[in-house]
Length: 80
Image (cartoon, rainbow, N blue to C red):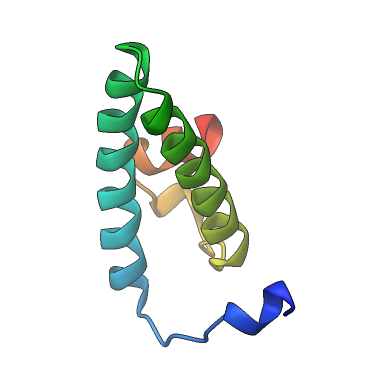
């Protein structure tokens, strides 16, 4: 079975994607703390989550005007 067989297309608004990204960032912080405490399962999930976040960023259209973005959005784009 090919890996692509498991992909699905979902229709999401920009606001939906922003909400999902915020939730994933919160989950990333939780998993970071758990993995630093010695959780190997948390480290694995954290790595999986980071990969998902990278894929989402690549597939999310870039904003037309960066000047209109908030500082937190610009910082997230620089560091994540």
